[in-house]
Length: 67
Image (cartoon, rainbow, N blue to C red; front, side):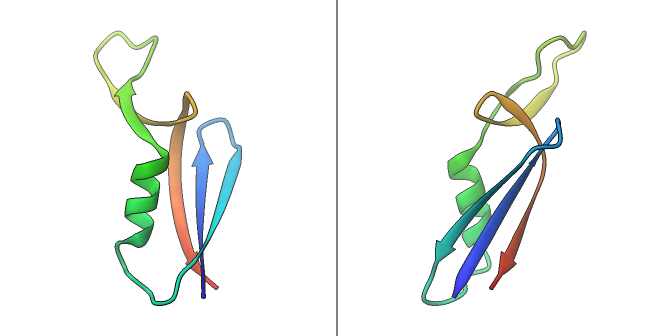
């Protein structure tokens, strides 16, 4: 069984990661997403705003699919 994690960036780019797993764990995608991304301050904002980043680019959303 494969789990496909898709990270969608604010600038429109999409990054896909495939993981082979023996059994399905509903928390696997959340753990994988947290390993790949980090939280930090958004630059250029008047007020303090926290965002999620992947390789110094802000993340819009992520999805997880089972294949």
